[in-house]
Length: 253
Image (cartoon, rainbow, N blue to C red; front, top):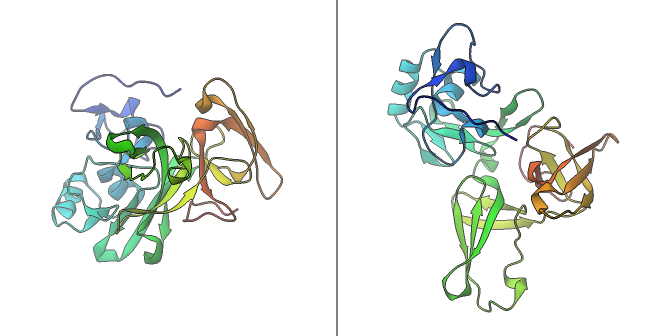
């Protein structure tokens, strides 16, 4: 399980910063502490570190803050000016002056990294369902891994066909229209990528699901096109498509 980081509410020591942040470990004492937002400390990259250390778009944090103040950096289609903003899995980062688009994807060595994508898929994002709640009038509210909520209007609450979504399923979401384009269920035969643990970045088809008391702890077996096999828990598995990944995930099937 992820370790808890305690200490100052405003600052973060380099020594306890997540290992996937590409920052010098011996040159500084303090680093950027992410603002409260859609992703937790251990599963995000502060936007300032992403621009300065991942992309090399800036050289200092002062320059980074100045660039962000110009409102030319977007995350999921929205302007972000906070250098502490937490950017996480599947988020889309756009740098307007450069005409560049990047997606945050799982990586075998870093846990999280950036994959450059084309403008044609910059409005698409894969969202994993974290919670499913029945709200007023029998409608269903979905809460995704990035904290986003989406209301599914149901005409007949007794008809499960209208709301087939389950936790750990993934949807292809249109960031422009704010609508669900496709439902990717968490089931055998689906292409999925591992986003946590020692198999992070492994892409393969779900071959077997050994269900136990808690669904999130179910043992999942994935098989890559090369024949390589990986096993991990359901909580670490992120479906990305049926025949091929619906968006760029940094790894080829």
